[in-house]
Length: 120
Length: 137
Image 1 (cartoon, each protein chain N blue to C red):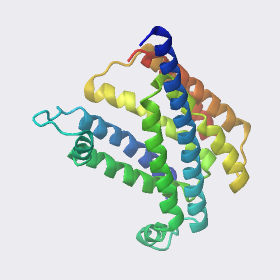
Image 2 (cartoon, chains in turn brown, orange; image 1 turned 90 degrees about the vertical axis):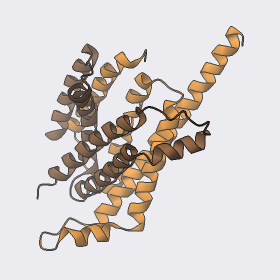
Image 3 (cartoon, each protein chain N blue to C red; image 1 turned 30 degrees about the vertical axis):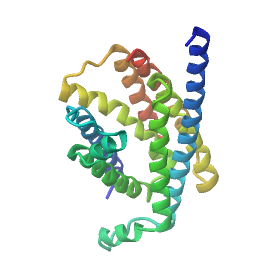
Image 4 (cartoon, rainbow over the protein chains, first blue to last red; image 1 turned 120 degrees about the vertical axis):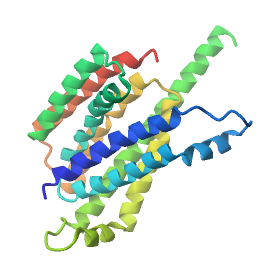
């Protein structure tokens, strides 16, 4: 199997985990009780979106290692910057968040850089 | 707090943030190198055996060590974000690329060609441009 499949699976799963985390931390906070900071953190960790995000990250790590088993680290590592592109695009699709002009230009430049790495 | 004290306190925060960032970068790069070395030693995924065998063989001390370093790096990254602007932390974090290149060249004899270095520089400039709009958030 082409090891790039492992690489791109890993990157897509990391992006998905970002959205799970985002969902987890943006749910309305429980203010009914005067909980301490540690209780709040523990409560947050056991929230289902946060657990989903952590699981997605764990699976992403396994795919990342499978990618590393047959490809050079200096080749696969720069591909992580694809997350800078996928996260704003996902936010645009899911939350209808605006992508600023700076970000559009930045995304274009990062794409060019990844293209160069892909041919290295 | 007087104006002068406020400036000193902001500067201290930034210094602390940069220290966290440097620790994050060093630990994360070390984690990647440890993981690569672990997978390097395991060898390529065999075609003739089920992948579950390979996945089980991955559960080893070097892999756990690499993942632990990765997790610790995330902790320092979050700490650094409490002190620094994302518009600074994101581009500065890309310094990892060059440490990865140097480490992979020394440890695994990977050939770092010009295309790879130029590609990394282009990506970094893209991250710098992209980060310009998060200054005020």
